[in-house]
Length: 149
Image (tube, rainbow, N blue to C red):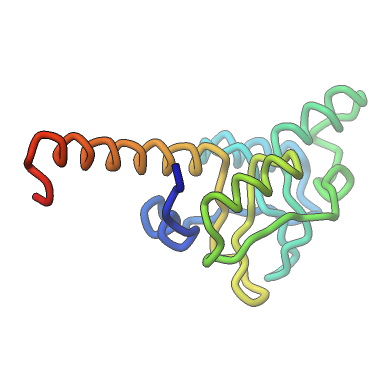
């Protein structure tokens, strides 16, 4: 099944709120913000420039397992400088492919040089489930003679 939709549509549905963290903030501050906002990753921003992504995975693998302390380790010490991102015109399917290929769970959405949103694998899965539900309802309506409306 071909999934119709692009990231702009998904962001319009889910919202464009983006919480971020400064690279000089502590890992503890980042984890605290993620817990407060119930999110799994934070864009790391120096001013308006995206310099990385901080995730729960970074915390467990690069702080806990390395014996570092979250209250003394700055975020910039443990983030990867390579960020996979997309623009708002990208398709849902392409984003799924990128996440799978790069083994990431969050994609920043960039327009020009500006961060305009962030999508998670969960956002994409929810979009796909909704699209499949609509398609199924349309097929049921067509078969029962109710289609097109």
